[in-house]
Length: 257
Image (cartoon, rainbow, N blue to C red):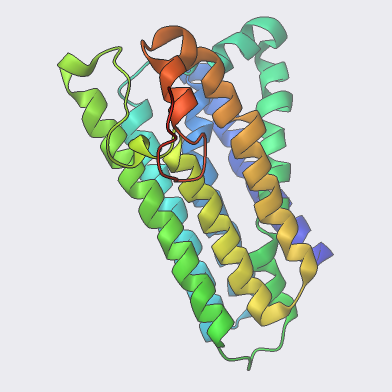
């Protein structure tokens, strides 16, 4: 366990440092967000490669995290490349400087990658001859459902924003009709799915620290809570949207009078 953590920590520290050094020239610190998804695929791939074991559970886990992470990375790259630097990183740099940005934004991601990737790491500590069970198949379906929800949500939002007539308008169509943040909900569903899958193989309860942390971050730190503070001030009709629409889980509309 410790060896895997150190390997993942070292690898991502090197990559993150290179990305930070690049940001000093490009002044685009938000490109670190693009690496977030793929980092889990690369970290998992390195551990399994060093294990020299390509059992079915590991192939499935790597495929799921790869599908989720690489899709997210491509989406964020296509989105970020068309706009100016994220204001969050601009403010951190203004108040704390480039080194402060490295410590408060970049290094935190290195630590989070190590912790959140633990479900996939746990498979390296289990016998190689374990087979899939019904519980594992259900977990795979949950993980895929999360990816589908997140992908559809991102596509619907991108398409909505691409239409000039929708500038400054409220997005409440498609999955966004049933949730104010269906993309974050899909993200959370994926992490619960992949964690349940790994648990079905390793039966290691520590695995669930991963989806708990991810769901908390999505709800309280970098996701729902952060966006709600800014959107409500910019989008007309957002107050009514809040009253009638679930903030996270996809649910039927509430009746408001």
